[in-house]
Length: 339
Image (cartoon, rainbow, N blue to C red; front, top):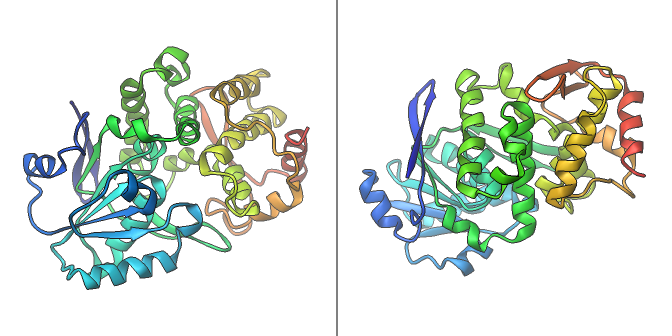
């Protein structure tokens, strides 16, 4: 078992990594002092894989259901279950469930206790850590949200046994991102074959950043490496591309843009390309219109007053935020990725 503390402006919480946490979840709650009424929020796929017998709220599976409509449905479930201000919301699922259930917990009755039990690699290493919750609008991803710190994050690597290979690959995009940002060990093929080591190292990168910048006033924006491209690709494809697929090719785009602008030495983009290709994620955006992708970037939360803003790289573990990047440079990179 590993316990990783996270300090926040409101106090602290801990991330527990241990096999079997979910198979005896009531025992887990008792061990860590979580008593009282609970409501689990999960999706239809996980409910079939891990049937729940205690009260739960149910949402459909997929990014396209990370919406205010789904949050309203969860509110209805909460009301029917008699949820009060001491009821604990348990988010059991991937990033979509965690973000949506977390936003519902942050807003129902002006805030309910909240616990994350991530079931995907992506959620384990990224979205379950840091207290950002929210939903998408038709205009863009994560445009409605809040900061809601969990009481605990329980990571059970055994849950990865039912994770589809496509979802594992998507999670690896975030792992590679963390390697590019801060810890090159995460780019080592041997470590990439060790799930528990991989999870611990990747989470450590995220913890260090969110502790230094809990409300995304500066450094935390580095965690969006590849995401300006990725979110736009998700949007223009109607979320036919998964988040991990879009971020993976977004990392390649960010590295190519870094080279094009002369920020880093030639060769970095090839390193990133090789990582993404080896994992089995898309490396091209064939059939997607660069102009539409660029237009979709205008809804990116990182852009300020209409000015473009990208997280780029001077090298591995050397992220930098660059503003007012010329549209022509971005379009050139996007066109290169169509080949």
